[in-house]
Image 1 (cartoon, rainbow, N blue to C red):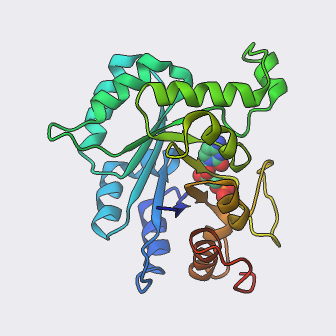
Image 2 (image 1 turned 90 degrees about the vertical axis):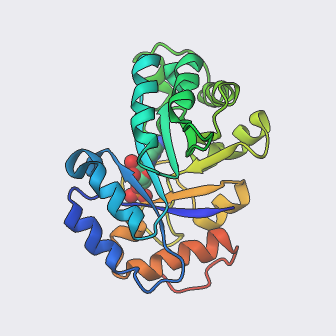
Length: 242
Ligand code: C5P
């Protein structure tokens, strides 16, 4: 079940397609994350095009609006045939239920639906001063995760360091999708709470979301394969650094 999702944070269709061309001969096609930058520039057509190439897709649009708007938007997105999409848990349990309803097709099938708890860029101090949430961040994250579980969602996006807390509260089958991944020998960039693919496996992540360590690597295919070896197959440091 574990898999590596490559965050394709590009701003045009041509960039992402030529990046994915490099993986054409790979036996395992990367699970691709399409975020706001690419979706707002290239639209639903890029989702169809990447899907037609045989990739699974996580459409990371982080919806957050009134329940009726989210429900109707999810209904539109369900026609795109993505494999995973998301909302903000802070939209409330009602909004998450509405999202799930909108996403479920007439035949009962639907993509996985996960919730963002607190963005990993939000510190406990900012949560207190800007959002007036006066609780420890771990408690807020597990509470939001529990709301997502109550609404019927499949899991949450969280820091890998929070994955075990989420599993403890919501059960081992509740998915932990974790960005903030770096190889042992690499720079952190702007990420703060980071861990390696091998450590994310140990902590219990179900999916890791990896961007720059793959997209900016001199050899993206071998960087991706290194993530797969470490995270999916549990072989630490089996390859040289990309
Ligand atoms: O390049 P890097 O590996 O840092 O990319 C991580 C990806 O995960 C980016 O697409 C970023 O938007 C996303 N993400 C994150 N932290 C969150 C939610 C999403 O880094 N809390």
